[in-house]
View 1 (cartoon, rainbow, N blue to C red):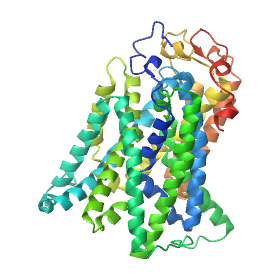
View 2 (cartoon, one colour; view 1 turned 90 degrees about the vertical axis):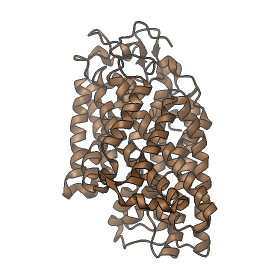
View 3 (cartoon, helix red, strand yellow; view 1 turned 180 degrees about the horizontal axis):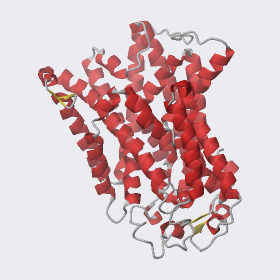
Length: 497
């Protein structure tokens, strides 16, 4: 697909659709999902559902239902990305305007950079554990600190930051190769950890274990729904920008199959084995261990410990690059394509992730919950607006050339490059979801912010856009480069099969 006379304010090689090479096939997307879920964060999310008072089998069911919802959502965003073959911030230009797309791009970048720093810090804690096991004398470096982190912590954090940056500087192909390696590797570590804990628990676990009595039917239903959408919220950001990866998929079928294998089978299996490890830890430690690092530190077999730590740290670095590094890189390129390349944006993301001192951010729940949580609450409204625009308003048709046209006559120029209808729908739905996240009286409803945001944001945008006579909403193809839903795609109902 060629782009005729692209505007340099909106275009560079990294954003162009012709850079998609069809290399992310079903197997690669399957490995992507393995890398995405198999991490300290994924384990903590799954085990954290016990805090809601659910029993072991209820945690598994709620987690699995959340995965099913994510499967359908990622089929929508993933298939759309495969059809149009542009990264998320460029795709968002159709709904938010050629300049307005910077709004969702920067909001997604803020969340991604914050979590990139936090995940790097968590992974560095695993590396530090490995360093102390191999070199006990290094414990003296823990007595010196700067900006809230020990000297040993700084060494491990900066080392891991550098390794991740080196991988990203290799481009999307390097990211794909890391994903292909890291995804299967962590399964080895998880299975080894599960066998070790189960052996210590006498090969016996209680699936009816719960940390508290949940109460009546209403409380149980609310607890189950909360657990389901906490699982969904954990992946709300990556679901939004899934097009960054599926733009390189050869066919829609490869995206759907990759999602089926990686989400429906792999992610559910990961949740099950995480719960099994937690229930076994109840027998061993008297409570479900929420931090897998604590279990790793208790392993007395040096060989098993080293292999597990290396696998976990590798996998955590892999998920960090995949979920939290690639997205802000494309987002920054979209803001200033004349200046930023993939490498330059990657360096800036790495520097910003250090400057926010993520260990202090992670240590302060108020900051995480109110700042990152509030911005994260906007992922639902953004998803609702963008998917409604593509599937319901445009009937799966995008004028690819016009995504790079900054002229006032451009199809996606709207008003000075911004679409007030999309921004208005985001503002209203976003205000609701943010209030759900920060007002103490509504905090118990915060896990439902994503579905509320999708429904309110998407519904309001549909009401505003469906009645518009603006030419930007015309579903008919304007040029030969238009990506048409009836020629390039199957029916929307088939997308979620």
